[in-house]
Image (cartoon, rainbow, N blue to C red):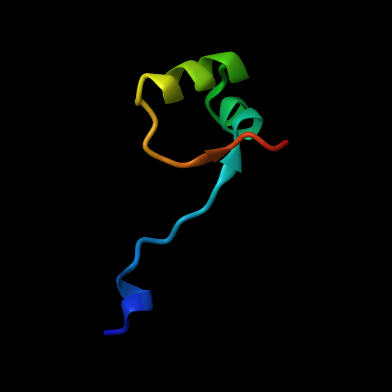
Length: 46
């Protein structure tokens, strides 16, 4: 198996998009990030 196949597939979404997906404000998503409640990487860019 190649190293490429062993890696977990990763994608990034913006904080704004993440907030829309879960129905909360971007401020709430940022607070969750600070507290370590989100495991996915998010981008500040909109």
